[in-house]
Image (cartoon, rainbow, N blue to C red; front, side, top):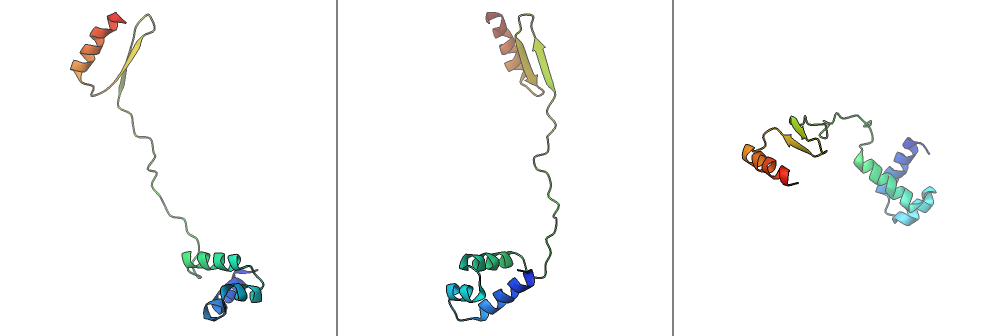
Amino acid sequence: MTPAQREKILQAWRASPVPDKAYAAQAGVGVSTLHAWRRKMAIRPPDSRPAFVAVPNLLAAVPAAPLYRLQWAGGLSLEVRAGFATAELAALLQLLPAL
């Protein structure tokens, strides 16, 4: 069925006092099909065309803060991002010999 035929059926249905189920039977379509057409037409006006809309990529990668990696001979490593509190870093470095 063409879009024009669907629109003609929908317009006649809107003007008809006949219940949905009876009108769908007269038109030769299922009542759920008739309702789906109505929903589709409610979303998009009859004369409009689908359009592409530019959407910003909100998931774009944010540049990571610089990373400092300290590695010890035994395989132990510590990664610190820029802006890390120096007092906390000093406390962590004092704990390392105990590991």
